Amino acid sequence: MLRLRWPGAPPMPMADYTSPFQAELPDHPYVCLMPGASTVAKAWEPEHFRETARLLSARGLLPVVLGGPAERDLGAFVAGDHGLNRCGDTLVEAAAWMQGASGAVGNDSGLSHLAAACGTPVLVLYGPMDPGMFTPFGPAVRTIQRDPLPCMPCGKDHCRVAGHPCLRDLTPGRICAELEPLLR
Image (cartoon, rainbow, N blue to C red):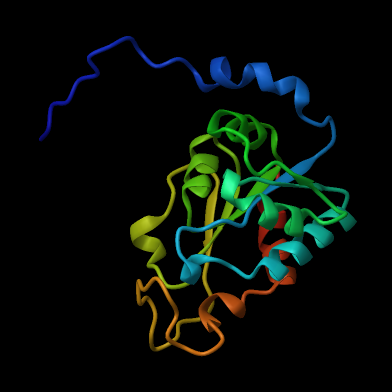
C-alpha cells in the first residue's frame, strides 16, 4: 500500500474557488454541453451536439457549451441560437458553470471528469474507448455507448470504419432521453 501524504495545507473547498463566478450564472435551469475531445474518434458529431442543444432549449433548459479556447468556433456552432457559448473560460469558471448545472453531456474528455468531480449529473458518450476503464468518478455519472461493434473498443485516435458508427449511431433524441432522469 502506498502511504502518500499531502505536504501542504488542505485544499480549499471548490466553492471557495468558484464563488466569484456564481453571480454570472443564470437563475433558470441549464445543462452544460462539452463537445470537445482529445481525438477525432472520441468526438460525437457537432451536428448532434447542436441538435441536442435545440432539444434541450425546447424543454426549457439553457444549453451552456463549455470547452477550451481552441473550441470557441465549435462552441458557437453547437450553441447556435439556442444556447450560450462559454468555450474559452478557465477551468475554474467551467467548474462554476458545472456546479450550478442541472446536468451535463460530454464526450470522453477531461471536462466530463471535471463535471463528475463537481458532483454534476453527467452523461458521458463513449465510442472507441472502454467506459469501464475510463469512467469518471462521481455520484451521478452515467455512460452511454452504442451496441457493440466487432471493432469495439478499438482505442484508436481515428476510426477505421466508414462513417464512425460507434458514436454516429447515438442520436440526440436518445441522449436527451438518457439525460432526463439524471437532471437535478
